[in-house]
Amino acid sequence: MQFGIFTVGDVTTDPTTGRTPDDTERVRAMLTIARHADEAGLDVFATGEHHNPPFVPSSPTTMLGYLAGVTKDIVLSTSTTLITTNDPVRLAEEYAMLQVISDGRMDLMMGRGNTGPVYPWFGQDIRNGIALAVENYALLRRLWTEDVVDWEGKFRTPLQGFTSTPRPLDGVPPFVWHGSIRSPEIAEQAAYYGDGFFHNNIFWPMSHTKQMVQFYRQRYEHHGHGPADTAIVGLGGQVFLRKDSQKAWDEFRPYFDNAPVYGHGPSMEDFTRETPLTVGSPQQVIDRYAAMREHVGDYQRQLFLIDHAGLPLKTVLEQIDLLAGEVVPVLRREAEAARPAHVPAGPPSHGERVAAARAAGQDGSAHVAPPRTAGPGASPRTRRACPPLRAPRSASDRAARPAHRRHRPAQHTHHRAAPAGAPMTDTTAGADRRLVVVSAGLSKPSSTRLLADRLADATVRGLREQGLSADVETVELRDHAHAVVDAMLTGFPTGDLAGVLERVYAADGIVVATPLFTTTYSGLLKSFVDVLDKDALTGTPVLLGATGGTSRHSLALEYSLRPLFTYLRADVATTSVFAATDDWAAAETDAGGGLPRRIERAGRELAATVARRESTGPADPFATAPDFESLLGGL
Image (cartoon, rainbow, N blue to C red; front, side, top):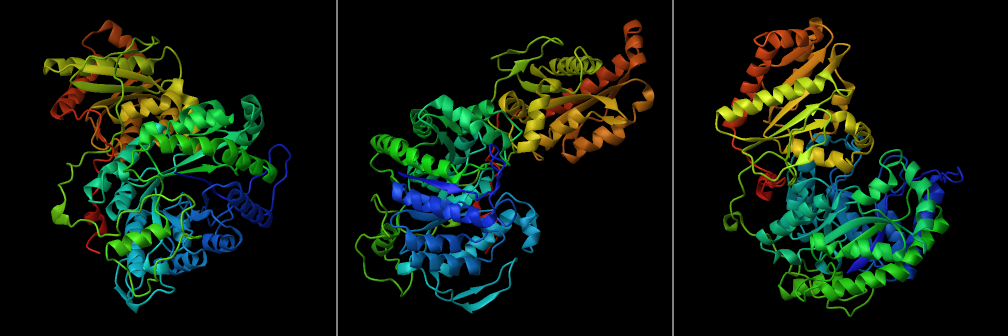
């Protein structure tokens, strides 16, 4: 198994000294870090690609080409090569040149990046992100595997009789990883070609990582490249080590708290609990990362982020020594002891790929050289030969894809509604339908929560009349306000909020109630909506309710709240309910009055819509990932 480090190349002020390195100092520090990692015995150094401050690695091949001349054994790679905005012709040439210079001691990872503005900077549209990744990589592979290429696609000028130079070393292209955090289409792309899949899960809980890796493994086997457990998988990670765990926490905390990505967001305690970030002693890091295989199976590459957030170069070099000297040897030994014999220990080296290509009779081109003895191009730790370089199975050989279902996250626990102010209790009874009630009231008790409960009760009665039972969970957004703000700042839901989002996504029906302020819904509700997946509520039945001081605010339901959920493509009930202060007084004295009647009618409408829809249960979030032929679009 390979262990290494990757860098994002951020230029960040050291919060303990107030000093900020300039770009030149940061680039030179990255070179020093890579050389030290090679000397310490780590297997991989990978650099990202960024074209905006505060990041400096805008030219990965320039940096890696230099490092090829000053390092001996370490594999030189990228943690992102922007397949979407780089010209695939230049990628073919630059990385083939790097492959020749390094004598095959390199690979690369395709990615779409995480900076939206980079697309227009390079003349592309972010809305074409997946399509660009698919088309550009299809062309890149042809440029590496065919001596003469004729090409016409959607995103670049046609090619006629074009030959990319230099040709790949020994006629075999570099090994390619596809990196993705959230897009099953990219996992599908990696599986289709039999390439590696890298899930850089530094900001994500292991439950999400497990789903992505399992999907890739299943599709890898489906496309005929071998058993699922032989697919080539890599994971990201973050660590900060000291011999004494408390010293590690004390030293790293100011850097965490002020980091440009997650600073001023979730606490370090939350982040270390919910993500792979591990701060502590070498043994704590060993325990955490040795357990990764229990979630994703045996995997081939583990990269750590250790040089970010303004950490001084001296500290980073000390981290490398601890990682290489005390952590990696144990992790490598445990991984090897647990790995089944048929599962590759690491990704294939260049020498192994050449041998496999020869064995399969796929020399790639006339440029294939005679077999070479093990040298710099061979992996520092020899593994079994990689699978032959082969074309994916034809479309006629493939099983039909699952029926498409809308995106919903993983399994969750159901709850029944609790009285206002009372704690919710888990239920294990299998109800026919699941309702989630979202109350955006700011006080306890609140008229908004009261309206939400009445609407939920009416809906349950309506379902009962149709012979259906219902589980109801009520979410008080005020209890999650800080987590919502953190998620907006970091893009990462922590703690109970992550579970709330899962249950909202998996609901068969949703009741939303909000107070109205200055003619619109509460900012708390809007913030919560902003952290929802924009496609997660598509087709979900939603009933809207609102409270306000007087009836003159009632139109806000129609011109403000309804458009919000229509934008999310929810199935919004025709009847919505507004409750002014006077309406509650009338409701108490007149059981047949306006508000009770509206509540009952709205609840029945939502119940009818929910009843008509088959309850899908916790859905597979990757069921909607298209088969790769549809992504290729006939290229």
